[in-house]
Image 1 (spheres, rainbow, N blue to C red):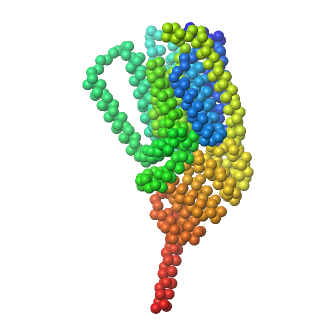
Image 2: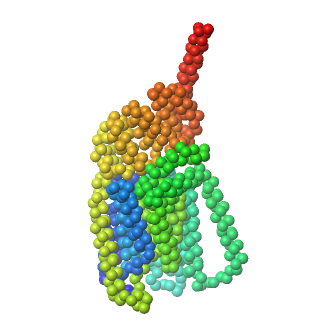
Image 3: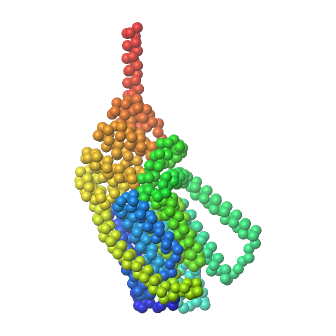
Length: 636
Protein backbone atom coordinates (compact mmCIF):
# COMPACT_ATOMS: atom_id res chain seq x y z
CA UNK A 1 0.00 0.00 0.00
CA UNK A 2 1.36 3.41 -0.92
CA UNK A 3 1.89 5.78 1.95
CA UNK A 4 -0.41 8.76 1.51
CA UNK A 5 0.50 12.25 2.58
CA UNK A 6 -1.77 13.79 5.24
CA UNK A 7 -4.49 16.04 3.92
CA UNK A 8 -3.83 18.77 6.48
CA UNK A 9 -0.55 18.66 8.41
CA UNK A 10 -1.58 20.66 11.47
CA UNK A 11 -4.47 18.26 12.18
CA UNK A 12 -1.92 15.58 13.08
CA UNK A 13 -0.58 17.77 15.89
CA UNK A 14 -4.08 18.58 17.15
CA UNK A 15 -4.87 14.86 17.28
CA UNK A 16 -1.80 14.29 19.44
CA UNK A 17 -3.08 16.52 22.24
CA UNK A 18 -5.53 14.07 23.92
CA UNK A 19 -2.91 11.30 23.84
CA UNK A 20 -0.28 13.58 25.38
CA UNK A 21 -2.82 14.65 28.01
CA UNK A 22 -3.43 10.99 28.76
CA UNK A 23 0.28 10.42 29.44
CA UNK A 24 0.28 13.54 31.61
CA UNK A 25 -2.37 11.84 33.75
CA UNK A 26 0.48 10.61 35.96
CA UNK A 27 1.11 14.18 37.14
CA UNK A 28 -2.38 14.51 38.64
CA UNK A 29 -2.41 14.19 42.42
CA UNK A 30 -4.38 11.24 43.79
CA UNK A 31 -6.52 13.49 45.99
CA UNK A 32 -7.50 15.84 43.16
CA UNK A 33 -11.20 16.84 43.10
CA UNK A 34 -12.61 14.33 45.59
CA UNK A 35 -9.85 13.75 48.22
CA UNK A 36 -10.65 10.02 48.05
CA UNK A 37 -7.62 8.82 46.06
CA UNK A 38 -9.17 8.68 42.57
CA UNK A 39 -7.67 11.86 41.10
CA UNK A 40 -5.77 10.04 38.34
CA UNK A 41 -8.85 7.99 37.45
CA UNK A 42 -10.90 11.17 37.10
CA UNK A 43 -8.28 12.58 34.75
CA UNK A 44 -8.45 9.39 32.68
CA UNK A 45 -12.24 9.56 32.39
CA UNK A 46 -12.10 13.20 31.32
CA UNK A 47 -9.61 12.57 28.51
CA UNK A 48 -10.76 9.13 27.29
CA UNK A 49 -13.87 10.57 25.60
CA UNK A 50 -11.64 12.55 23.22
CA UNK A 51 -9.37 9.63 22.31
CA UNK A 52 -11.65 7.85 19.78
CA UNK A 53 -12.53 11.23 18.24
CA UNK A 54 -8.86 12.20 17.87
CA UNK A 55 -8.10 8.76 16.42
CA UNK A 56 -10.96 9.05 13.92
CA UNK A 57 -9.80 12.52 12.85
CA UNK A 58 -6.24 11.28 12.41
CA UNK A 59 -7.46 8.30 10.38
CA UNK A 60 -9.52 10.60 8.14
CA UNK A 61 -6.52 12.88 7.65
CA UNK A 62 -3.95 10.16 6.87
CA UNK A 63 -5.96 7.13 5.65
CA UNK A 64 -3.37 4.57 6.75
CA UNK A 65 -4.77 1.07 7.20
CA UNK A 66 -3.71 -1.05 10.18
CA UNK A 67 -1.93 -4.38 10.01
CA UNK A 68 -3.78 -6.44 12.60
CA UNK A 69 -1.66 -8.51 14.96
CA UNK A 70 -2.36 -11.75 16.81
CA UNK A 71 -2.19 -9.76 20.06
CA UNK A 72 -5.31 -7.86 18.96
CA UNK A 73 -7.33 -11.07 19.06
CA UNK A 74 -5.82 -12.16 22.38
CA UNK A 75 -6.70 -8.78 23.91
CA UNK A 76 -10.28 -8.92 22.60
CA UNK A 77 -10.77 -12.46 23.93
CA UNK A 78 -9.26 -11.48 27.28
CA UNK A 79 -11.60 -8.49 27.62
CA UNK A 80 -14.70 -10.53 26.81
CA UNK A 81 -13.86 -13.39 29.19
CA UNK A 82 -12.68 -11.22 32.12
CA UNK A 83 -15.68 -8.90 31.84
CA UNK A 84 -18.16 -11.76 31.40
CA UNK A 85 -16.91 -13.76 34.39
CA UNK A 86 -16.85 -10.70 36.64
CA UNK A 87 -20.38 -9.78 35.60
CA UNK A 88 -21.55 -13.25 36.60
CA UNK A 89 -20.14 -12.63 40.09
CA UNK A 90 -21.44 -9.09 40.62
CA UNK A 91 -24.56 -9.02 38.40
CA UNK A 92 -23.59 -5.39 37.82
CA UNK A 93 -20.81 -3.33 36.25
CA UNK A 94 -18.39 -2.08 38.90
CA UNK A 95 -15.71 0.56 38.41
CA UNK A 96 -12.96 -1.93 37.60
CA UNK A 97 -15.07 -3.60 34.92
CA UNK A 98 -15.98 -0.26 33.33
CA UNK A 99 -12.33 0.81 33.37
CA UNK A 100 -11.27 -2.51 31.81
CA UNK A 101 -13.51 -1.91 28.78
CA UNK A 102 -12.29 1.68 28.41
CA UNK A 103 -8.69 0.44 28.48
CA UNK A 104 -9.58 -2.02 25.73
CA UNK A 105 -10.92 0.87 23.65
CA UNK A 106 -7.75 2.83 24.39
CA UNK A 107 -5.63 -0.11 23.20
CA UNK A 108 -7.35 -0.25 19.79
CA UNK A 109 -7.27 3.54 19.45
CA UNK A 110 -3.51 3.49 20.07
CA UNK A 111 -3.17 0.70 17.49
CA UNK A 112 -4.90 2.81 14.85
CA UNK A 113 -3.36 6.14 15.84
CA UNK A 114 0.29 5.08 15.90
CA UNK A 115 0.30 3.93 12.26
CA UNK A 116 -1.25 7.11 10.88
CA UNK A 117 1.95 9.13 11.05
CA UNK A 118 5.47 8.34 12.21
CA UNK A 119 5.58 11.55 14.22
CA UNK A 120 2.85 10.20 16.53
CA UNK A 121 5.13 7.62 18.14
CA UNK A 122 8.03 10.08 18.26
CA UNK A 123 5.98 12.73 20.04
CA UNK A 124 4.35 10.34 22.51
CA UNK A 125 7.69 8.89 23.58
CA UNK A 126 9.06 12.42 23.95
CA UNK A 127 6.03 13.35 26.06
CA UNK A 128 6.52 10.24 28.20
CA UNK A 129 10.14 11.21 28.91
CA UNK A 130 9.05 14.73 29.84
CA UNK A 131 6.45 13.34 32.25
CA UNK A 132 9.10 11.10 33.80
CA UNK A 133 11.52 14.01 34.11
CA UNK A 134 8.89 16.21 35.77
CA UNK A 135 7.98 13.40 38.21
CA UNK A 136 11.64 12.87 39.10
CA UNK A 137 12.19 16.62 39.57
CA UNK A 138 9.06 16.72 41.76
CA UNK A 139 10.59 14.01 43.92
CA UNK A 140 13.86 15.93 44.25
CA UNK A 141 11.94 19.02 45.37
CA UNK A 142 10.15 16.90 47.98
CA UNK A 143 13.44 15.39 49.12
CA UNK A 144 14.92 18.81 49.83
CA UNK A 145 11.75 20.18 51.43
CA UNK A 146 10.62 22.59 48.71
CA UNK A 147 7.28 20.81 48.18
CA UNK A 148 5.31 18.49 50.50
CA UNK A 149 5.04 14.75 49.88
CA UNK A 150 1.63 13.21 49.20
CA UNK A 151 1.95 10.91 52.23
CA UNK A 152 2.73 11.94 55.80
CA UNK A 153 5.00 8.92 56.40
CA UNK A 154 7.24 9.36 53.33
CA UNK A 155 9.55 12.12 52.19
CA UNK A 156 9.46 11.30 48.48
CA UNK A 157 6.42 10.17 46.49
CA UNK A 158 6.05 12.57 43.53
CA UNK A 159 2.39 12.81 42.54
CA UNK A 160 1.75 9.29 43.87
CA UNK A 161 0.51 8.32 47.33
CA UNK A 162 3.65 6.39 48.34
CA UNK A 163 7.20 5.90 47.02
CA UNK A 164 6.68 2.32 45.74
CA UNK A 165 4.53 3.12 42.67
CA UNK A 166 6.40 6.40 42.22
CA UNK A 167 9.72 4.57 41.93
CA UNK A 168 8.18 1.96 39.64
CA UNK A 169 6.86 4.62 37.29
CA UNK A 170 10.29 6.24 37.02
CA UNK A 171 11.91 2.82 36.52
CA UNK A 172 9.61 2.14 33.57
CA UNK A 173 10.49 5.43 31.86
CA UNK A 174 14.26 5.18 32.41
CA UNK A 175 14.84 2.57 29.62
CA UNK A 176 12.98 4.81 27.15
CA UNK A 177 15.19 7.77 28.00
CA UNK A 178 18.31 5.59 27.82
CA UNK A 179 17.38 4.32 24.36
CA UNK A 180 17.04 7.81 22.91
CA UNK A 181 20.19 8.89 24.72
CA UNK A 182 22.03 6.16 22.80
CA UNK A 183 20.27 6.35 19.44
CA UNK A 184 19.89 10.11 19.00
CA UNK A 185 23.54 10.92 19.58
CA UNK A 186 23.96 10.24 15.86
CA UNK A 187 22.18 13.56 15.27
CA UNK A 188 25.38 15.32 16.38
CA UNK A 189 27.53 13.57 13.76
CA UNK A 190 29.27 15.90 11.32
CA UNK A 191 27.79 14.22 8.26
CA UNK A 192 24.24 14.86 9.57
CA UNK A 193 23.55 18.57 9.63
CA UNK A 194 20.00 18.83 8.21
CA UNK A 195 16.72 17.77 9.81
CA UNK A 196 18.30 16.90 13.15
CA UNK A 197 16.79 19.53 15.45
CA UNK A 198 14.03 17.25 16.77
CA UNK A 199 16.48 14.42 17.40
CA UNK A 200 18.88 16.75 19.24
CA UNK A 201 16.02 17.98 21.43
CA UNK A 202 14.94 14.40 22.12
CA UNK A 203 18.53 13.43 23.01
CA UNK A 204 18.73 16.36 25.46
CA UNK A 205 15.40 15.41 27.04
CA UNK A 206 16.59 11.81 27.33
CA UNK A 207 19.82 12.92 29.00
CA UNK A 208 18.09 15.16 31.53
CA UNK A 209 15.45 12.52 32.26
CA UNK A 210 18.11 9.88 32.89
CA UNK A 211 20.01 12.20 35.23
CA UNK A 212 17.07 13.25 37.41
CA UNK A 213 15.65 9.70 37.59
CA UNK A 214 19.02 8.26 38.59
CA UNK A 215 19.34 10.94 41.27
CA UNK A 216 15.97 10.26 42.91
CA UNK A 217 15.46 6.52 42.33
CA UNK A 218 17.89 5.31 45.06
CA UNK A 219 16.13 7.43 47.71
CA UNK A 220 12.82 5.58 47.22
CA UNK A 221 14.25 2.33 48.67
CA UNK A 222 12.10 0.34 46.23
CA UNK A 223 13.91 -2.90 45.40
CA UNK A 224 11.33 -3.83 42.76
CA UNK A 225 11.89 -0.51 40.98
CA UNK A 226 15.67 -0.93 41.07
CA UNK A 227 15.41 -4.39 39.53
CA UNK A 228 12.92 -3.18 36.93
CA UNK A 229 15.12 -0.26 35.90
CA UNK A 230 18.22 -2.46 35.70
CA UNK A 231 16.60 -5.14 33.55
CA UNK A 232 14.79 -2.64 31.34
CA UNK A 233 18.02 -0.74 30.68
CA UNK A 234 19.89 -4.01 30.06
CA UNK A 235 17.30 -4.95 27.42
CA UNK A 236 17.69 -1.56 25.75
CA UNK A 237 21.48 -1.69 25.73
CA UNK A 238 21.55 -5.30 24.59
CA UNK A 239 19.16 -4.63 21.75
CA UNK A 240 20.82 -1.40 20.73
CA UNK A 241 24.35 -2.78 20.61
CA UNK A 242 23.20 -6.05 19.05
CA UNK A 243 21.20 -4.57 16.19
CA UNK A 244 22.39 -1.00 15.68
CA UNK A 245 26.14 -1.27 16.24
CA UNK A 246 26.87 -4.70 14.82
CA UNK A 247 26.91 -3.21 11.33
CA UNK A 248 29.77 -0.94 12.37
CA UNK A 249 31.87 -3.48 14.21
CA UNK A 250 31.57 -7.24 14.41
CA UNK A 251 33.26 -8.94 17.34
CA UNK A 252 33.98 -12.62 17.09
CA UNK A 253 33.62 -14.27 20.46
CA UNK A 254 34.66 -17.79 21.28
CA UNK A 255 32.36 -20.20 23.11
CA UNK A 256 34.62 -20.03 26.17
CA UNK A 257 34.38 -16.26 26.28
CA UNK A 258 30.59 -16.39 26.00
CA UNK A 259 30.39 -18.93 28.83
CA UNK A 260 32.67 -16.80 31.00
CA UNK A 261 30.55 -13.70 30.40
CA UNK A 262 27.39 -15.66 31.20
CA UNK A 263 28.88 -16.92 34.49
CA UNK A 264 29.93 -13.41 35.51
CA UNK A 265 26.49 -12.05 34.62
CA UNK A 266 24.65 -14.76 36.60
CA UNK A 267 26.96 -14.25 39.59
CA UNK A 268 26.24 -10.53 39.64
CA UNK A 269 22.49 -11.22 39.38
CA UNK A 270 22.54 -13.74 42.26
CA UNK A 271 24.54 -11.44 44.53
CA UNK A 272 22.26 -8.50 43.72
CA UNK A 273 19.08 -10.50 44.37
CA UNK A 274 20.44 -11.80 47.69
CA UNK A 275 21.41 -8.28 48.75
CA UNK A 276 17.99 -6.90 47.85
CA UNK A 277 16.30 -9.74 49.76
CA UNK A 278 18.20 -9.08 52.99
CA UNK A 279 17.72 -5.32 52.64
CA UNK A 280 14.04 -5.77 53.66
CA UNK A 281 13.78 -9.42 54.67
CA UNK A 282 10.41 -9.18 56.44
CA UNK A 283 8.86 -7.45 53.45
CA UNK A 284 10.21 -10.08 51.05
CA UNK A 285 9.01 -12.97 53.23
CA UNK A 286 5.61 -11.30 53.61
CA UNK A 287 5.18 -11.11 49.85
CA UNK A 288 6.22 -14.74 49.53
CA UNK A 289 3.36 -15.65 51.88
CA UNK A 290 0.94 -13.55 49.81
CA UNK A 291 2.03 -15.30 46.59
CA UNK A 292 1.73 -18.72 48.21
CA UNK A 293 -1.82 -18.12 49.43
CA UNK A 294 -2.79 -16.40 46.16
CA UNK A 295 -1.86 -19.54 44.25
CA UNK A 296 -3.82 -21.67 46.71
CA UNK A 297 -6.80 -19.38 46.25
CA UNK A 298 -6.54 -19.63 42.46
CA UNK A 299 -6.35 -23.43 42.60
CA UNK A 300 -9.89 -23.57 44.03
CA UNK A 301 -11.54 -22.27 40.86
CA UNK A 302 -10.66 -21.99 37.18
CA UNK A 303 -12.66 -18.80 36.83
CA UNK A 304 -11.20 -16.52 39.50
CA UNK A 305 -12.87 -14.43 42.18
CA UNK A 306 -13.94 -11.59 39.89
CA UNK A 307 -12.39 -8.17 39.20
CA UNK A 308 -11.91 -6.24 42.42
CA UNK A 309 -12.45 -9.23 44.71
CA UNK A 310 -8.87 -10.38 45.25
CA UNK A 311 -8.47 -8.95 48.74
CA UNK A 312 -11.72 -10.44 50.05
CA UNK A 313 -10.90 -13.87 48.65
CA UNK A 314 -7.37 -13.65 50.01
CA UNK A 315 -8.62 -12.83 53.50
CA UNK A 316 -10.80 -15.94 53.47
CA UNK A 317 -7.91 -18.07 52.18
CA UNK A 318 -5.55 -16.77 54.86
CA UNK A 319 -8.13 -17.46 57.57
CA UNK A 320 -8.55 -21.08 56.43
CA UNK A 321 -4.77 -21.51 56.18
CA UNK A 322 -4.03 -20.46 59.75
CA UNK A 323 -7.17 -22.08 61.14
CA UNK A 324 -6.03 -25.42 59.74
CA UNK A 325 -2.74 -25.16 61.66
CA UNK A 326 -0.58 -25.20 58.52
CA UNK A 327 0.87 -21.75 59.13
CA UNK A 328 4.25 -21.39 60.83
CA UNK A 329 5.01 -18.95 63.64
CA UNK A 330 7.02 -16.88 61.18
CA UNK A 331 4.08 -16.71 58.76
CA UNK A 332 1.70 -15.73 61.55
CA UNK A 333 4.04 -12.87 62.40
CA UNK A 334 4.21 -11.71 58.75
CA UNK A 335 0.50 -12.02 57.90
CA UNK A 336 -1.41 -8.87 56.99
CA UNK A 337 -4.45 -7.72 55.03
CA UNK A 338 -3.10 -6.94 51.52
CA UNK A 339 -5.21 -5.12 48.95
CA UNK A 340 -3.08 -6.60 46.15
CA UNK A 341 -1.17 -9.80 45.41
CA UNK A 342 2.08 -7.84 44.84
CA UNK A 343 2.43 -9.92 41.68
CA UNK A 344 0.16 -8.98 38.80
CA UNK A 345 0.38 -12.43 37.22
CA UNK A 346 -0.86 -14.03 40.45
CA UNK A 347 -3.56 -11.37 40.78
CA UNK A 348 -4.83 -11.94 37.23
CA UNK A 349 -4.97 -15.66 37.98
CA UNK A 350 -6.77 -15.15 41.30
CA UNK A 351 -9.29 -12.58 40.02
CA UNK A 352 -9.85 -13.65 36.41
CA UNK A 353 -8.85 -17.31 36.22
CA UNK A 354 -6.56 -19.40 34.07
CA UNK A 355 -7.80 -18.52 30.57
CA UNK A 356 -7.30 -14.73 30.87
CA UNK A 357 -3.83 -15.33 32.33
CA UNK A 358 -2.87 -17.55 29.38
CA UNK A 359 -4.19 -14.93 26.94
CA UNK A 360 -2.20 -12.25 28.77
CA UNK A 361 1.00 -14.30 28.62
CA UNK A 362 0.57 -15.03 24.91
CA UNK A 363 -0.03 -11.31 24.30
CA UNK A 364 3.22 -10.45 26.08
CA UNK A 365 5.24 -13.13 24.27
CA UNK A 366 4.08 -12.16 20.78
CA UNK A 367 4.47 -8.47 21.59
CA UNK A 368 8.09 -8.96 22.64
CA UNK A 369 8.84 -10.99 19.51
CA UNK A 370 7.33 -8.35 17.24
CA UNK A 371 8.92 -5.45 19.12
CA UNK A 372 12.38 -7.00 18.83
CA UNK A 373 11.81 -7.77 15.16
CA UNK A 374 10.82 -4.14 14.52
CA UNK A 375 13.69 -2.92 16.72
CA UNK A 376 11.40 -0.84 18.94
CA UNK A 377 13.77 -1.24 21.86
CA UNK A 378 12.51 1.83 23.73
CA UNK A 379 9.11 0.10 24.01
CA UNK A 380 10.58 -3.39 24.55
CA UNK A 381 12.83 -2.12 27.36
CA UNK A 382 10.04 -0.12 28.98
CA UNK A 383 7.67 -3.10 28.76
CA UNK A 384 10.32 -5.40 30.26
CA UNK A 385 10.83 -2.97 33.16
CA UNK A 386 7.09 -2.71 33.76
CA UNK A 387 6.63 -6.49 33.79
CA UNK A 388 9.55 -6.97 36.19
CA UNK A 389 7.99 -4.37 38.48
CA UNK A 390 4.66 -6.20 38.09
CA UNK A 391 6.27 -9.33 39.56
CA UNK A 392 6.69 -7.57 42.92
CA UNK A 393 4.10 -4.80 43.02
CA UNK A 394 0.66 -3.72 41.79
CA UNK A 395 1.13 -1.43 38.74
CA UNK A 396 -2.01 -2.68 36.97
CA UNK A 397 -4.10 -1.25 39.81
CA UNK A 398 -2.82 2.26 39.02
CA UNK A 399 -3.97 4.23 35.99
CA UNK A 400 -0.61 5.75 34.86
CA UNK A 401 0.96 2.29 34.59
CA UNK A 402 -1.99 0.94 32.60
CA UNK A 403 -1.76 3.80 30.11
CA UNK A 404 2.00 3.35 29.68
CA UNK A 405 1.55 -0.43 29.43
CA UNK A 406 -0.87 0.02 26.53
CA UNK A 407 1.47 2.51 24.86
CA UNK A 408 4.37 0.05 25.03
CA UNK A 409 2.26 -2.85 23.75
CA UNK A 410 0.98 -0.92 20.77
CA UNK A 411 4.36 0.70 20.04
CA UNK A 412 5.88 -2.78 19.70
CA UNK A 413 3.30 -4.15 17.25
CA UNK A 414 1.81 -1.19 15.36
CA UNK A 415 2.75 -1.14 11.68
CA UNK A 416 1.00 -0.03 8.52
CA UNK A 417 -0.88 -2.54 6.39
CA UNK A 418 1.48 -3.60 3.58
CA UNK A 419 0.25 -5.48 0.55
CA UNK A 420 1.51 -9.05 0.24
CA UNK A 421 1.92 -11.20 -2.84
CA UNK A 422 -1.42 -12.09 -4.38
CA UNK A 423 -0.16 -15.65 -4.78
CA UNK A 424 -0.10 -15.93 -0.99
CA UNK A 425 -3.43 -14.13 -0.54
CA UNK A 426 -5.95 -14.58 -3.36
CA UNK A 427 -8.23 -11.80 -2.08
CA UNK A 428 -7.85 -8.65 -4.15
CA UNK A 429 -5.78 -5.87 -2.59
CA UNK A 430 -8.49 -3.22 -2.83
CA UNK A 431 -10.98 -5.57 -1.14
CA UNK A 432 -8.57 -6.19 1.73
CA UNK A 433 -7.94 -2.47 2.16
CA UNK A 434 -11.66 -1.77 2.06
CA UNK A 435 -12.43 -4.34 4.77
CA UNK A 436 -9.52 -3.06 6.83
CA UNK A 437 -11.05 0.41 6.64
CA UNK A 438 -14.46 -0.93 7.65
CA UNK A 439 -12.90 -2.65 10.67
CA UNK A 440 -11.14 0.55 11.74
CA UNK A 441 -14.33 2.60 11.37
CA UNK A 442 -16.32 0.01 13.35
CA UNK A 443 -13.78 0.07 16.18
CA UNK A 444 -13.83 3.86 16.33
CA UNK A 445 -17.64 4.11 16.24
CA UNK A 446 -18.11 1.49 18.94
CA UNK A 447 -15.30 3.01 20.98
CA UNK A 448 -16.81 6.49 20.82
CA UNK A 449 -20.31 5.29 21.70
CA UNK A 450 -19.15 3.14 24.60
CA UNK A 451 -16.81 5.82 25.98
CA UNK A 452 -19.61 8.39 26.07
CA UNK A 453 -22.04 5.90 27.61
CA UNK A 454 -19.54 4.78 30.27
CA UNK A 455 -18.64 8.34 31.25
CA UNK A 456 -22.35 9.18 31.51
CA UNK A 457 -22.99 6.12 33.71
CA UNK A 458 -19.90 6.76 35.87
CA UNK A 459 -20.67 10.42 36.53
CA UNK A 460 -22.88 9.57 39.56
CA UNK A 461 -19.89 7.62 40.92
CA UNK A 462 -17.76 10.75 40.67
CA UNK A 463 -20.46 12.76 42.49
CA UNK A 464 -20.63 10.03 45.15
CA UNK A 465 -16.86 10.24 45.72
CA UNK A 466 -17.13 14.02 46.01
CA UNK A 467 -19.89 13.65 48.61
CA UNK A 468 -17.82 11.07 50.46
CA UNK A 469 -14.79 13.36 50.51
CA UNK A 470 -16.88 16.14 52.06
CA UNK A 471 -18.75 13.90 54.53
CA UNK A 472 -15.53 12.24 55.73
CA UNK A 473 -14.89 15.29 57.91
CA UNK A 474 -17.91 14.30 60.00
CA UNK A 475 -16.71 10.75 60.69
CA UNK A 476 -13.67 11.49 62.92
CA UNK A 477 -15.75 14.15 64.70
CA UNK A 478 -18.14 11.43 65.88
CA UNK A 479 -21.17 12.88 64.05
CA UNK A 480 -22.34 9.40 63.10
CA UNK A 481 -26.00 10.21 62.46
CA UNK A 482 -25.02 12.86 59.91
CA UNK A 483 -22.54 10.42 58.36
CA UNK A 484 -25.25 7.77 58.01
CA UNK A 485 -27.63 10.22 56.31
CA UNK A 486 -24.99 11.29 53.77
CA UNK A 487 -23.53 7.83 53.18
CA UNK A 488 -26.91 6.12 52.74
CA UNK A 489 -27.56 8.19 49.59
CA UNK A 490 -24.25 7.29 47.92
CA UNK A 491 -23.98 3.70 49.16
CA UNK A 492 -25.20 2.10 45.85
CA UNK A 493 -22.31 3.77 43.98
CA UNK A 494 -19.58 3.01 46.53
CA UNK A 495 -19.86 -0.71 47.14
CA UNK A 496 -16.37 -1.30 45.72
CA UNK A 497 -14.70 1.08 48.21
CA UNK A 498 -13.67 -0.80 51.40
CA UNK A 499 -12.83 2.35 53.41
CA UNK A 500 -16.25 3.80 52.68
CA UNK A 501 -17.99 0.56 53.60
CA UNK A 502 -16.16 0.36 56.92
CA UNK A 503 -16.93 3.97 57.83
CA UNK A 504 -20.59 3.51 56.87
CA UNK A 505 -20.91 0.17 58.66
CA UNK A 506 -19.29 1.48 61.85
CA UNK A 507 -21.44 4.63 61.80
CA UNK A 508 -24.56 2.46 61.54
CA UNK A 509 -23.29 0.43 64.50
CA UNK A 510 -22.72 3.58 66.54
CA UNK A 511 -26.29 4.72 65.82
CA UNK A 512 -27.75 1.36 66.83
CA UNK A 513 -28.80 0.24 63.33
CA UNK A 514 -27.27 -3.20 63.74
CA UNK A 515 -28.81 -5.27 60.94
CA UNK A 516 -28.14 -2.62 58.31
CA UNK A 517 -24.60 -2.27 59.65
CA UNK A 518 -24.03 -6.02 59.31
CA UNK A 519 -25.25 -5.95 55.69
CA UNK A 520 -22.86 -3.13 54.77
CA UNK A 521 -19.94 -4.75 56.59
CA UNK A 522 -20.52 -8.06 54.82
CA UNK A 523 -20.18 -6.16 51.53
CA UNK A 524 -16.77 -5.09 52.81
CA UNK A 525 -15.66 -8.67 53.52
CA UNK A 526 -16.18 -9.49 49.83
CA UNK A 527 -13.59 -6.94 48.66
CA UNK A 528 -11.25 -6.55 51.64
CA UNK A 529 -9.02 -8.77 53.80
CA UNK A 530 -9.16 -6.29 56.70
CA UNK A 531 -10.20 -8.23 59.84
CA UNK A 532 -11.89 -5.09 61.21
CA UNK A 533 -14.94 -5.87 59.06
CA UNK A 534 -15.40 -9.19 60.89
CA UNK A 535 -14.69 -7.52 64.22
CA UNK A 536 -17.39 -4.91 63.64
CA UNK A 537 -19.87 -7.60 62.59
CA UNK A 538 -19.02 -9.39 65.84
CA UNK A 539 -19.60 -6.22 67.84
CA UNK A 540 -23.00 -5.81 66.19
CA UNK A 541 -23.91 -9.37 67.14
CA UNK A 542 -22.65 -8.82 70.66
CA UNK A 543 -24.90 -5.76 71.02
CA UNK A 544 -27.78 -7.94 69.83
CA UNK A 545 -26.77 -10.51 72.47
CA UNK A 546 -26.24 -13.12 69.76
CA UNK A 547 -23.08 -14.28 71.48
CA UNK A 548 -22.35 -17.43 69.47
CA UNK A 549 -22.40 -15.43 66.22
CA UNK A 550 -20.22 -12.73 67.78
CA UNK A 551 -17.72 -15.38 68.89
CA UNK A 552 -17.64 -16.84 65.37
CA UNK A 553 -16.73 -13.50 63.81
CA UNK A 554 -14.14 -12.63 66.45
CA UNK A 555 -12.47 -16.00 65.93
CA UNK A 556 -12.60 -15.48 62.17
CA UNK A 557 -10.73 -12.17 62.59
CA UNK A 558 -8.22 -13.75 64.99
CA UNK A 559 -7.39 -16.50 62.47
CA UNK A 560 -7.41 -14.11 59.52
CA UNK A 561 -4.50 -12.05 60.87
CA UNK A 562 -3.07 -14.03 63.84
CA UNK A 563 -0.62 -11.34 64.97
CA UNK A 564 -3.45 -8.93 65.85
CA UNK A 565 -4.26 -8.44 69.53
CA UNK A 566 -7.69 -6.82 69.23
CA UNK A 567 -9.81 -9.88 68.24
CA UNK A 568 -8.48 -11.87 71.21
CA UNK A 569 -9.10 -8.93 73.54
CA UNK A 570 -12.72 -8.72 72.34
CA UNK A 571 -13.13 -12.48 72.79
CA UNK A 572 -12.00 -12.18 76.41
CA UNK A 573 -14.51 -9.36 76.99
CA UNK A 574 -17.24 -11.38 75.25
CA UNK A 575 -16.65 -14.44 77.42
CA UNK A 576 -16.87 -12.28 80.53
CA UNK A 577 -20.19 -10.90 79.32
CA UNK A 578 -21.41 -14.44 78.63
CA UNK A 579 -20.38 -15.56 82.12
CA UNK A 580 -17.74 -17.92 80.69
CA UNK A 581 -15.06 -16.74 83.12
CA UNK A 582 -12.65 -19.64 82.56
CA UNK A 583 -12.63 -18.95 78.81
CA UNK A 584 -12.22 -15.25 79.52
CA UNK A 585 -9.25 -16.00 81.80
CA UNK A 586 -7.58 -18.21 79.16
CA UNK A 587 -8.08 -15.59 76.46
CA UNK A 588 -6.79 -12.84 78.76
CA UNK A 589 -3.55 -14.81 79.15
CA UNK A 590 -3.31 -15.06 75.36
CA UNK A 591 -3.63 -11.27 75.11
CA UNK A 592 -1.01 -10.61 77.79
CA UNK A 593 1.53 -13.06 76.36
CA UNK A 594 1.02 -12.18 72.70
CA UNK A 595 3.80 -10.34 70.89
CA UNK A 596 2.67 -7.52 68.64
CA UNK A 597 4.38 -6.12 65.53
CA UNK A 598 3.74 -2.49 66.44
CA UNK A 599 3.43 -1.39 70.04
CA UNK A 600 1.07 1.47 70.85
CA UNK A 601 -0.75 3.04 73.82
CA UNK A 602 -3.89 1.13 72.80
CA UNK A 603 -1.99 -2.17 72.96
CA UNK A 604 -0.60 -1.32 76.39
CA UNK A 605 -4.08 -0.41 77.64
CA UNK A 606 -5.55 -3.72 76.43
CA UNK A 607 -2.74 -5.71 78.03
CA UNK A 608 -3.02 -3.77 81.29
CA UNK A 609 -6.77 -4.40 81.40
CA UNK A 610 -6.25 -8.12 80.81
CA UNK A 611 -3.55 -8.31 83.51
CA UNK A 612 -5.98 -6.73 85.93
CA UNK A 613 -8.66 -9.21 84.87
CA UNK A 614 -6.25 -12.13 85.42
CA UNK A 615 -5.42 -10.84 88.91
CA UNK A 616 -9.13 -10.52 89.73
CA UNK A 617 -9.78 -14.02 88.46
CA UNK A 618 -6.90 -15.41 90.53
CA UNK A 619 -8.23 -13.65 93.63
CA UNK A 620 -11.70 -15.06 92.97
CA UNK A 621 -10.14 -18.50 92.55
CA UNK A 622 -8.22 -18.19 95.84
CA UNK A 623 -11.36 -16.99 97.59
CA UNK A 624 -13.32 -19.93 96.26
CA UNK A 625 -10.61 -22.33 97.44
CA UNK A 626 -10.63 -20.83 100.95
CA UNK A 627 -14.42 -21.14 101.03
CA UNK A 628 -14.20 -24.77 99.95
CA UNK A 629 -11.58 -25.49 102.63
CA UNK A 630 -13.86 -23.98 105.30
CA UNK A 631 -16.77 -26.11 104.14
CA UNK A 632 -14.54 -29.18 104.28
CA UNK A 633 -13.37 -28.27 107.82
CA UNK A 634 -16.95 -27.75 109.01
CA UNK A 635 -18.02 -31.04 107.43
CA UNK A 636 -15.22 -32.87 109.23
